[in-house]
Length: 232
Image (cartoon, rainbow, N blue to C red):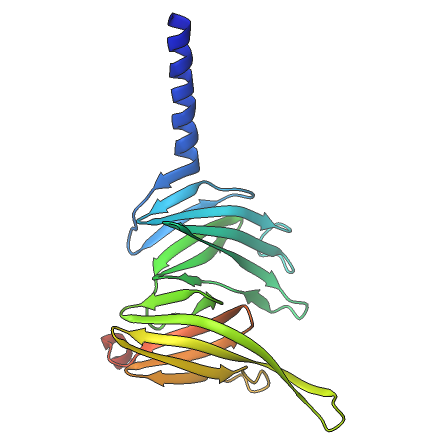
């Protein structure tokens, strides 16, 4: 009987330790949550209704600021019965320019990578006006009372009189909504030769399209009525 009781205690201790490692519940401090990361799989973190799971951190070379180093985080976000998987990456192109695809927007949160020497952290913050964000195809970003849905991307091309393809471009559809009002906006790929963003005006908002691809859009939203923008 004593042996049986001891075995139960051991199993309970193992379960408690395992549960504590795989998931912890945290609150935001100063409107942000900082999660230290290590190479490979990291523990899950509970934030309100979200379970944040840094599934795999990959670093191609060290130190992380070395030219041509490649950093990629596979991130799972579980919200009740829905599961969202995305990738945050940072690398240097052959011309030496840095290429990143974060902070990523999900609902009313942004997920960002912060690097200091060889330390990498996942920073979670509430989405805010005047800050750039990437929104994946099919995902929703909520800033204040404004909801933005990246609905779809349609690949198109033009041909010459001989039927040869001369140009390829995408047409994007995003849905903007606030309370009971909703509008779908369509626009084409940015002209990469001009380095100019596209500006979309709706109600009191200005949505700047900074980068585009078939998988994600880089946007920045300005609220023309906010005190922050009036002081600029």
